[in-house]
Image (cartoon, rainbow, N blue to C red; front, side, top):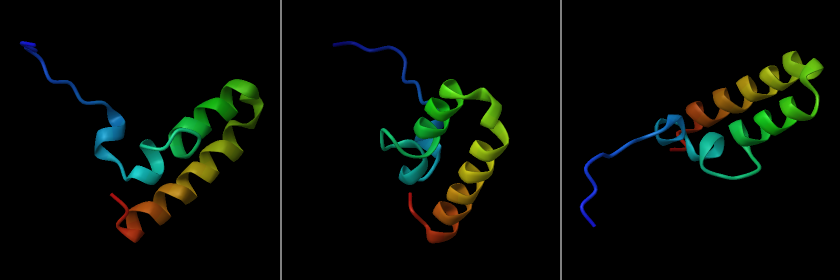
Length: 60
C-alpha cells in the first residue's frame, strides 16, 4: 500500500480508559461539552478524576 507517513494522536499516549473507548474518557467529555458548554468545570473535574485513576491504576 505504500504509506509514507505514520501519525499518532493524543489517544495513542493515554491509558485506554481515557482515549480508546468510544463513549468514555475524552470522547465522553467532548460530547458532554458540546451538549452543554456551561458545564465545562464539572466536565473537566470528572475527566481529571478519571485520568488520575487511570494513570495510578496503570491502565494503558
